Length: 470
Ligand code: BYC
Ligand code: FE
Ligand code: FE
Image (tube, rainbow, N blue to C red; front, side, top):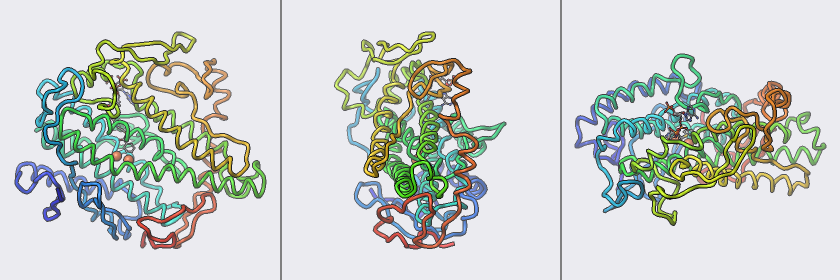
């Protein structure tokens, strides 16, 4: 299924023959572009950026690479191909044909899920809008912008669903997605992590490793949805998500590699003196981004999540691979709960634990990158290990939110937690120091001193390729 690029909005949903929808989207488009120019990447709207753009939705060659000025990026609506005869894979409607229209009784719930997903996408662009000015290389600058245009496309993906399937309320929600802003006091973004600033590149790499990975797991469970247009939209979004997480994993790996190089040369305690970011600071950034991202999965026990599942709206990660009845009504799941001042493992209704199952998948996946970062440290012969903190550490949502839990998983008093906080979460001194390193490196092939160059360029281009022309 190829993409129609002839109209104003590239798409593979046959907009050419759907006049009502085409006009609704064309009316939304100018507001979107205004938003992009005001709150998208600051200072680079006129630059030529070497970007990939989707040209088909099948695995081979969906992307083409070329120079684009970002406001001219062809944001479009791309759904993965329909699976003929697809049936609902879980919940009370299991085995019934998937829905091509919104089922009336689930309309409000489905709209809310789509709005929540859609809200995160422009939020991340807003959070990252000032990073361009301090990019450590043209290669990194280009990756930032690639992530930004794709997150903006993810907004299109959700706006398409709202406009195509939710009538007037859908149009209103589509407008509201451009009105809420990250960190705004009157109209903040919906979820916590998306109102936190992304002030420096170490934060950006941590964000794309940990927070975009929440995106992967949320999209994967929405890709199981019985509402087929949502499932197909999310499937295609997942192909873009892989690059975002790659940027994060490699970004942190390169920071670690540079740190190790300096540590070997000058001593592990003198890395900052020589313009690197010492491992304890990296650990504190990791602790922050990981714990904030864990919150994005919602409460450990959630009737919302149970309802989404039973209704067939949001499944588990790789739903079909679970060797059970996909109803979960009589099953239990082992999870950690807070029982007064103790943490206690116990079995709870599997249906209520859907959020926790997804978080468990996420935690396992997050650990893989950390192991690869640790291999870099080990290979450098240094005695230090990065760790994922305990799942209860620094949580604002769910079971652990009222408790003061150490990265090691111990419940302590608020007073001693606060007294130790500076060793666990980035201090203002850490942030100032990291900020002081953030100087742009804009000559082709040049890299800032706090980060190692990557192993290879983008799309087989050399490292000194001019990825962004100012
Ligand atoms: N912050 O039953 P509970 C991405 C609210 S990232 C603030 O625990 P539920 C991306 C919740 O709304 C993926 N509020 O939660 C990444 C509820 O409110 P009400 C984004 C929160 O509903 C990087 C109450 O607390 N996609 O794509 O089971 C760059 C109790 O809720 C938070 C999605 O999130 C929070 N962290 O699950 C760009 C998928 N957590 O009902 C993009 C769609 C919970 O009391 N969303 N609350 O008013 C969902 O599936 C669910 O809304 C959640 C929450 C999993 C987020
Ligand atoms: Fe996204
Ligand atoms: Fe992403």
